[in-house]
Image (cartoon, rainbow, N blue to C red):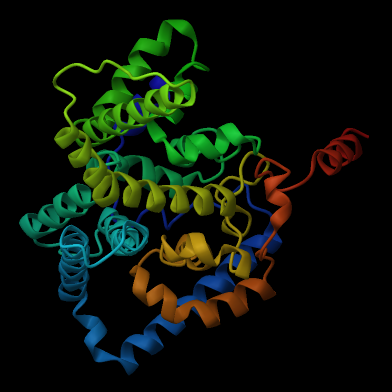
Amino acid sequence: MSSLSEKLMSQPAKAEGGSRIKQNNINALDQKRIATIKTAVLAEGDRIRAKYPILKHQDLIGMAILLLSIAGAVLTGWAYLEGMLAWYVTIPVIAVFLSFTHELEHDLIHYMYFRKNKFMHNLMMTLVWFCRPSTINPWLRRHLHLHHHKHSGTETDLEERAITNGERFTPLRLLMMLDLELSVVLRIMKVPKHLRLKALMRGAIGNFPLATVFYAGWHAYVAYWAVEAAAWAVGYNVPWPALVTPELVATANTVAVLIFAPNLLRSFSINFISSNMHYFGDIEDGNFVQQCQVLNSKWFIIPHLFCFNFGSTHGIHHFVVRDPFYLRQMTAKKGHEVMRANGVRFNDLGTFKRANRWEAKEQRREEAGYQAA
């Protein structure tokens, strides 16, 4: 894992985000389907851009969305501190604002904003990172993400593997989606012993400093209340050090509402949707038809609220990289129509039983036996 990560990190980032994939290994039918979908989505994007000239100001739109998202999160936090909002309202509202910054980071990784202005581009990258301190360094993520576009669903797709794509669906997988630090540690345990330290160091570099501080604080907070709950259950008063004052605990509770909980809610939602809308393991390398499904069932309304309808529109992005997240929402109707007609799956809930494989084990065995014969 670490040697693979080192290789990926050494590859230069490309602005096209892997839009040009070698199709030598893709079956002829899907090659035609891919071309048809791309043509239709590009045409729809061009039509919408022509209809709404304001969309040509892509840099300004991106910056405006970022500033409004930050303002919305800050004002929501202020309203909570002033006693105008309850914690159970504050947490989801902030998480919604943070979901916009995740989409902006993704677009920035593909150089969609301020491509020709390095200062403004890096300023936006910095701001979206600080808005979501539980995430890895976005400049490092860029290499992993562009590789993801080239080889989505394969063993080398470290970005999706890190958020549990391809794992059996268990309570542990749910916990790993919530706590990516835990996910990193558990995955490192699967790496050969002589490579574990190196893999751990690379994971630490990716998470430093924001995610390291975030998860250290979160784990300490959970540990404190776990001990308090256990002590309460047996009627015991914990002799905490003098440093642990009621004022410190009150501050920690406030941080939990304003920072810990919204970030964890947002990241769990995107990890849950993304890891299950992408297929893994038994797909053709570079085959966009097989890489993603469309998850737009009403059963996913709640997680979609905190990841900006990601499951419904991200599959479009695999076919056409150029469009920012808000434009994909506008092309979705036409995109879904042509994708459905050309073999892209919709709401394939069986993926939860198949560990995100394209086919069930029984079908794969039958196909393997047929090919052997």
